[in-house]
Length: 234
Image (cartoon, rainbow, N blue to C red; front, side, top):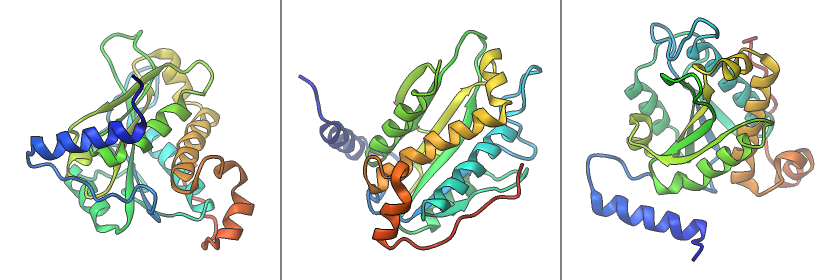
């Protein structure tokens, strides 16, 4: 029998409560949030994944995060960046910043790495069941990019997920250990497409299916405030 998204989320929530542990059970801001914390993975002394045939993860993750940030601001959502340049931010600091933002969600941007060069694809992680739908939407959107392999949505106990007060997801935008995907990651146009798919998933998750594509008219009726923001990063 096919389970609904709500049924799966409810089951995951029950498991989370009964299993206990030191992890935080997030407050459900799924469809009420007005702030998105955009987290660019790694930075500074932490380069993340890095192969000779492609850019370091910290650089491309930051670029995608800044593009997502701009698109969300243009969609009238308030955003907070955990980092806007090449600095090292400890994981606990990222979590703390996210937890300080009331009525928010947390989206962490990464690229992946594997020992085998043939491994490829995008995948999205979550911990709180309240983040399941957001993770699913992001994964589904990214999978529409031509040639993209969908590696699925998974639960994980990453610190930025399990200690988050609000729904949080971690997005792996491809494998830098895969030469084809590393070439894609190095291309600004492709990073723009990644950011567009992630932003679309977030906006439609908040306001409803299709809103991102017709957002100027919808947001005018909704009374959304705030202007667009163009980051200085190129």
